[in-house]
Amino acid sequence: MTTLGHLIDGARVAGEGRTQDIFNPSTGDVSGQVSLAGKATVEQAIAAAQAAFPAWRNTPPAKRARVMFRFKQLLEEHADEICRLIGQEHGKIVHDAKGELSRGIENVEYACGVPELLKGEYSKNVGPGIDSWSEFQPLGVVAGITPFNFPAMVPLWMYPMAIACGNTFVLKPSERDPTSALFIAELALEAGLPAGVLNVVNGDKEAVDTLLDDPRVQAVSFVGSTPIAEYIYARASANGKRCQALGGAKNHAIVMPDADMDNVVDSLTGAAFGSSGERCMALSVAVAVGDAAADALVAKMRERLTSLKVGPFSDAGNDFGPVITKAHQEKVCGYIDSAEAQGAEIVVDGRGVQVPGFENGFYVGGTLIDRVTAEMTCYREEIFGPVLLVVRAGSMEEAMKLIDDHEYGNGTCIYTRDGEAARYFSDNIQVGMVGINVPLPVPVSYHSFGGWKRSLFGDLAAYGPDAVRFYTKRKTVTQRWPSAGVREGAQFSFPS
Ligand code: NAD
Image 1 (cartoon, rainbow, N blue to C red):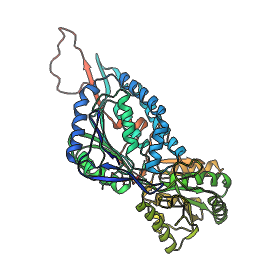
Image 2 (image 1 turned 180 degrees about the vertical axis):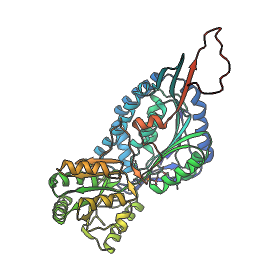
Image 3 (image 1 turned 135 degrees about the vertical axis):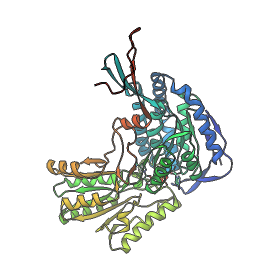
Image 4 (image 1 turned 120 degrees about the vertical axis):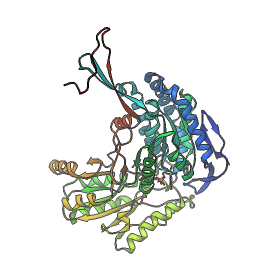
């Protein structure tokens, strides 16, 4: 059985010290081990990134972009291999892994345009014979810490833009499914990144804390759960670093009485149960306005759930795969238990589902829970499993208030045929990413991705235009070349 190490200064480095098992969630078997870097190993990676920075910073942006073009090509050539690695360790069905990878590649495409994005601002004659410009300089060593649920895509939200902007990078992927991130980073080196520009350290809290405390690390991008995001933001900021920390979610869909219910059921099914609900943009709560809409929704969803197929990642006929670990399977089932105990109605129960031939896999079947209220644990907390809650609201205002009162504000959506209602919703709802008859309003790579409230700590969102601002600092230069012989005396006030 192999132990996955690290990628430091252009070479694989065997780990030393602590290790952790990696599972194949489809079978429940241990498929390998990952080494958990100690402080010294992380410091080695930071030193490599620091050493690579001066030359990389001065490499013309067009040359940096050419590496990204080659990287994109290599990602496409190796897509099947990458998706198999994602499926083996995460459990998502291969076609879902392909979707993840293609969203990641879109961020590499955006990074290919970096010469245009870094052009800066210029003003001639801000005063007599005086010109001024703003340029965007890289920060130095940047760290990225990523979650298990998009092991390929979320790292690609971060380092292609960070590196294209002239920074060097240390990535700390999720220790639960680290292999695809390491494989992809090696492709980036093959594409032409000099040694040390991109480093990967595997590990857990010890590795993360080293990155947060080391003064050579200038900025930290984090994606993961809200308690950890808040911790990362507080510690990185206290250490004087720039930080963006994206957290968890509870994404609501309002189902208005005039919505096309067949369309709602189709799109909600994919958005709630795709990837076993382990997406930060999963629609996990349907708020039906009026009992008639709620009854129709629950009846149609119940019927749809009977045909949902859960099973191993390798079978393209499955709709979704297992959840990430045995502990997470138990946690998700615990939320269903609590909903039942607190008075909700379990319409379709995914607890105890058996997949023939894969009895030890970490499966939870598609679950539908009706008559959920705002006080229930299953409503207040992020479940991150294939569970759709239905809350009944008397009016659109009541439905919107539920969303606004929730601690998370990542994504939301409204299903309606009424343009005025949709416009009122998107204008006023306190959520960062809004869909109108679109269940998963994940912005494309040339916009930016970020929730509101406790779904994002920091000012700038991930990827897209915000990434250019996050991974660079503005320098404003004011320039004057006095004519030879013309000299003015000292000035003691601003020229007016
Ligand atoms: P997690 O918070 O457990 O882990 C994320 C990263 O933090 C991992 O690399 C992990 O090693 C590290 N980490 C964990 N505990 C730590 C600690 N105590 N100190 C320092 N570092 C620590 O998240 P996860 O379970 O891997 O991912 C799922 C979560 O991520 C969900 O809450 C989901 O909503 C969220 N997520 C959010 C977005 C978004 O864009 N907002 C995207 C994807 C996932």
